[in-house]
Amino acid sequence: MSRLPRTRLSRRGAIQLSGAGVGAAALAIGSNRYAAQAQDATPAAGGTPAAGGSSAAILQSFPYELPDLPYANDALEPVTSATTQDLHHDGLHANYVAEVNAALGAVPDAQGFTLEDLLLNLAIVPEDDTTALNGVVKPRRTLVRTNAGGHYNHSVWWDTMSPDGGGEPSGPLADAIDTAFGTFDTFKESMRLGALGNTGSGWTWLISDTAGALSITTTPDQDNPLITGEGYPVFGIDNWEHAYLLDYTSASGRGEYVDAWWDIANWNFIDGRYEAYLGL
Ligand code: MN3
Image (cartoon, rainbow, N blue to C red; front, side, top):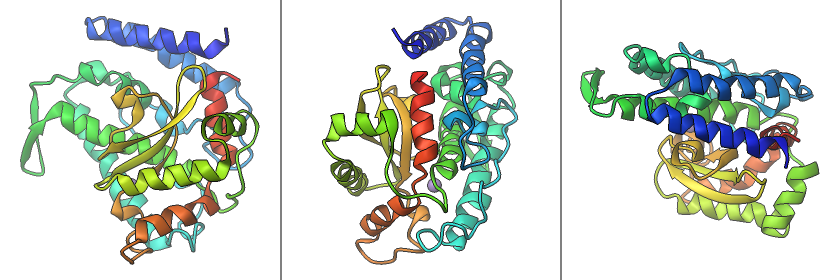
């Protein structure tokens, strides 16, 4: 039995204990194991925060901080413009961070969680509590779900792209993609169809189960497969219009964006994220 399934089972155990009110002590087990795993891994050659395929921001706890882009804001042109990156990172991602911090200020029991463990344990945020944000009263757990999800999804997203990207995955991930989809081209087309079918705002994900088997899923808004319990998000493609509409203005813009996106896919990071999850 490989190391990872045991880790994941332990993390699930921690979730159940947390739900029973045991909380932070049980959760610290999962957090510490994950952090140790990241420290043991060989840093990826490309992105600054991408050691072992793990974005630094997802291992942080409250108060969360906006990570810097691991490249210049115009580095991904022409696939994604500097204007889009400015809006997306400096505007929208910064807002997710500010709002999750505001919503968690009154939930001290959740403040020791890493960002990733918070998503796995959203039930620690009281369901019947409400808070006013920008004058609108909302359930606190909904606010945390949306904004912690947005912070996580975008923290991984920046590392998932690189000006030196493109090409194809390698190693265990390449093998698993061939097993699940037949060919890399078929996989890309499946991701494209997922994005086109995800008609509102959301994400299309490549997810792994605890044994490393891959599949594709889509989530609405800023949900991700950790929140929905569907699997581990190896990587996602942002399907929100803010990710592409300034650069791809035609009626078929979303499909054109997904087709172009593979030129900036950072397989060095994505390969590492898959391998780190499986403890390879
Ligand atoms: Mn986005």
